[in-house]
Length: 614
Image 1 (cartoon, helix red, strand yellow):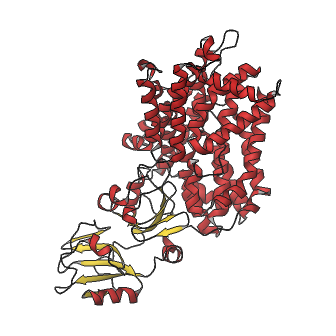
Image 2: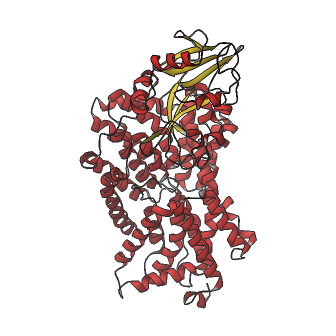
Image 3: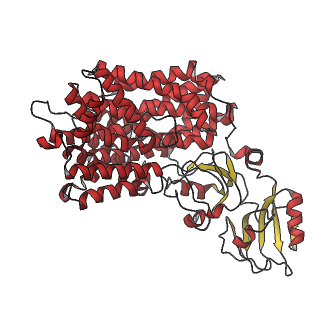
């Protein structure tokens, strides 16, 4: 940077700071998708010529983004082998009826898996495991999921690919080298297991905290578990969805003749319409545009008296025996399930009418649980939000196919297809080889991860189409677009200007530890409102400049920021926290009460360990 940029604002610095302010405001308001916000910021810097056009899209080819994609494919390969189905049985045997032992074991294993793939992917894998454990032990999900997700967050710090901030860190260090003042050593990218001691201390702290203190602060909560064997009682209690399924045949005098499925569903007092037979065609989740004719058979669910009253009012012949739909309603083939909408879902902001789950996927949405409030009417026009719990009715095979898109994560333990348990050994060997290659440091981590992903594709653990589906392109776009924004903060001198302004606020000759605490607290605050990636991109360049000006270790300050950016266990803005709020029924007060102390423990451990290592 030139000398003037360290003392006063230049035009480029003003542009970058305005773009960052706009980006942060949009993240806070949450009115626009995160990937679109990031793309808008990138294009603004390109049009203003702050970032040269030949470097504008470097983020898409950056090691951080490629590493994220590799971990997603590797995680999908492990999931496809059904390894976690076996794990749930092993956990039940090893816990020997003890809730403390079961929760600690489950959390420890999740924490040890989390540094090898993205945290949301690990949480997606462990939600059904937690559901099965809860169903078999009677321990409510509220007592399992928060310790589990906390271990995943803290265990992600064991490697440089366990969470987005650490994945971004090396690219930001390399970018910072372009503006390092003369006399300051070049910042060297960190090896894959560089943060291992810190991550191990964090994971152990988490396990000890919840084993001896934190779980006393957890409420029993509502039992959100659902298994095919106890669907009826659960959904009757939680959602008011009860009763049996009846067949109603449309007669010639029925007023329903010529009406569509959508028109019937909005009738006052109409039972749940789950199936329709017209002619020789029988199907669950009939599209709203399907018409009813004389002889059509409806599969409707509700209390017998309600269904009988509806049949009488509409001149329908009622049969309690499932002559037409017996196979469709076999619990081994179809049933009711719950799914949570993750923060990376393409469904966010769209209505059920927009996503066409019923007509295109064969899945009916019976209710939406949002912030402990159940919506059963008018849900077709209700825009979906991250953390929404969807109550679904479908054929299990249809649910499995729809879940591959990762736009919702099924919480219910249900019969799945397309598992490849015979590929388990191959998947584990390939996974171990990939990690071993990364550990040696002889080849780049990115190449090691993709060597493992390629091995899984060549051995048939995954197909190419499944690998494409495994990649969350929303995550890719957010990271790829924000990386050049962070570089612009450094290249223009904006990061240095902010760093000097921050130091001016502190007492003269302030302790380096006080400076680190302030940097960590600011990072955590940013993380709560602008996401982990946004906080990392904003704070790493500034922290490096603060370290240089204050006489600290630049890499230590950068590592501190990356770890602090992962310290969000208090709000649903953290993707993995958002995934468990609905299934466990957590309220903001529950998160604050149980995780507030752990957040302070996290910061203390990071501050101590970073200074020990550097």
